[in-house]
Each structure stands twice: as structure tokens, then as C-alpha cells.
Image (tube, rainbow, N blue to C red; front, side, top):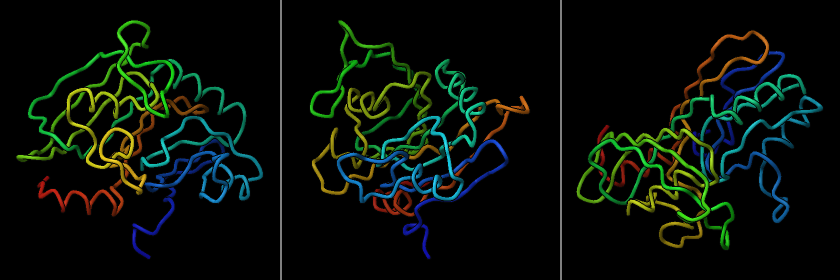
Length: 220
């Protein structure tokens, strides 16, 4: 079975937490509009009887997700995400040239408009993302994104604002039927809810991102 056909990989598991790397196109929670889509919560609830979702990634985004196996671990992990103390790093393939590292604090709208969020200086929420270019050519860039806040579509909206939207993004770039995004959450660091130790988890790109990188001609 190729990586492309996998739904997820289990990175780490103990009595209290489950760390999973999900593929692009996999939901974290059920979609009320399409119950046929594979989702992690329902899948692992069938295995463990009960599972708690701590945070979410967009269905089109691949990468690392932590789930809690009990309410105590869930509460402690949720507080870390609410306080923005969890370190998250993403890899992005963008359509547009990003040559230098930069941090943006453009505020993002509280509500979406037909599914899309916008930059809103009047009533938008504080949103901070730092971008570190890894490679670029005359058309595309491969970038590490480090969000300091956790707004919906934050990385996607910030990249769009700098005229470098994700190479594949059905909302913020060209309209395509494929709703997978060239966005991958490859790194997660937080305090273990029971032991109190700082734990880090990294994941390798799934085939979808690797194929897109080959198509751009980017070398990394």
C-alpha cells in the first residue's frame, strides 16, 4: 500500500493520548454534509469506545493531530491550545515567490463569507504567522509556516494576502474539484497532560505533497 492510499499513521500512543498523522482529504470530526468521508473521531471511537478531539486540521490539510483518551487529558491539552502554548509548524507549497523570512500580524475576520475568511482591519482577530522560505524558483515556493495564533484558515489567508496562495487551494486559489491542500502540519510540541514532560512529534510528507513538489521542480 502506498502512502497516498493511507488514511493515517499512528505516531505515538499511551494510556492518555493518541498522536496521529492524517492524510490529506481525511476529516478529524464527522462532516454533517457528507457522512461518507473518513473521519478520525468516528474511526477511533469504534476502536477505543470513546475518544476526545483536542484540535482540528482542515480536511484538506495533512499532518499531526493529537487526540485524548480521557476527559482529564482532553481538558489539559485543550487549555494548552487555547493559550497558544502549543508549538505548531507547517510545510506549504505556494504559487508565488517568497524569498525572505517574515512575520505577519494581519487580522482575520471572525466570520467566514461563503466559506472564506478575509483580512479585516476593523473587527478582525489578531493573527500572527511567521514564514521561513526553504526553496523557491520563478513560480513556486516551499515554505515553513509557524502560526503563533490559531485562527481558522490562518496560514491560507495570510499567504493569499501576500499574493502567494497555496499551490492547490480550492478556496483561496484556482477552483479545483480536488479539495486537498498543499499544506502539511509536520511538527507538534506540547506538555504531556499527565507526565508534565515536553513532547515533540514530527511526520514525513505523504505522497500528495511529494508529488506536488516534484511537479514544481523545487529542490529541498
